Image (cartoon, rainbow, N blue to C red; front, side, top):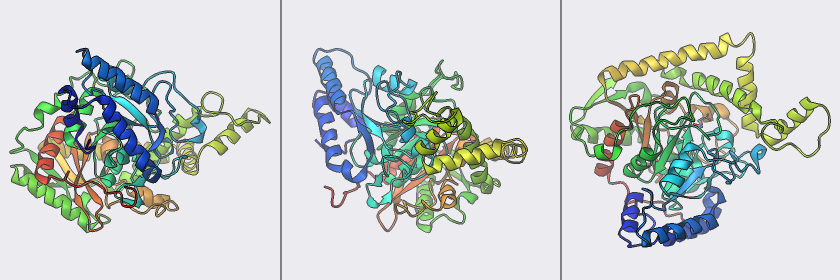
Length: 491
Ligand code: GLN
């Protein structure tokens, strides 16, 4: 079997009984065994359960029984999304040994209703705080295109498992770019949906007003397929919206003639690599060639994105993570000495990593009496200005095109000691989270080191259909999927 088939192609082969699900799962497991010692996409494998489910689904097919739309294809699911009886640790020592008694809504929809197979839990930055998957308690994920570089983050494991051919799909969460950063660095497609489009029930919160779970896949069509299944109202999450979900596949091939694509000049400013700009510009010209109208626009508040995002994210994090004290949630340290505050602080001090502790402290500071107005409230006000920048653009435009990340993947360890520099990498992804808009990242070329470059399309509220449509047509023109990482020295 060739594991670089697209997921939708494999689904057809399974339907036509050309290939058995068990063979597919075995092949993916073999690839994981061969490569994961080098890339570290997975923290836990579900080998036995995956093969068992594959056999059961093959049986159902043989008996002519119905099976779900994802017909037994493997998916790598990020470690912060609850799956019943599966280690869900957020890659933090504090949650070691936590096997949730219930499924997140997205897991129910994918695994129970549509018969995808969770092949394993993917690596991530601890509690999704980071942009490189280096703060995981299980060690970093490496970039399959260059093992000395980061895979992006925080959903680095989900990005690299697709690029490495270890899984057909991945599921990530995106608070400030965590789906799009690894999609960009690993050369895969990832989509952060509109806030309220996909249920967060069962997602362990980092910053709840910013994050969404979203699909990651090898191509736009597979990404659309996955989104179709997870999108929609959920009575278990009151922030999901009761709005019909578009039929994404049926619009992929729509003409984009006369669609207006906005180019915000600030998104191509200082700090964005020339090669990145060049490849993104080339893709914009391709879209123009397909009949789209290109319009330069201005986004005056981009420079405030990073402080605004980090103040809000850290404030929410300090509150969301208060429950992990060893008593209500999380593992208590062995020795119980002193009063309750000693126990809490020792448990939290020992079991949370450095970056998580930094953020809890900064967030608590920003929310404390006396500083609340100066930091948190001010950040909320600037968030509104950023939302207004977008609203103005979407009055006359259908989508925004820009780079996903300012650069290609950096070296492991390069930014670990310089958190501010690491935070600055999110400047082009955070705006969509602050506004709650949908955003897609897809590969649009390679730099001179052979590292993938991400192209970002930001859409209007609940208009995932348009960015998938534009992305799909661009992907056909770029014909980029002839190239996959060779994993030098591994295979
Ligand atoms: N890099 C950003 C952060 O560290 C985004 C993380 C995310 O989207 N979960 O907060």
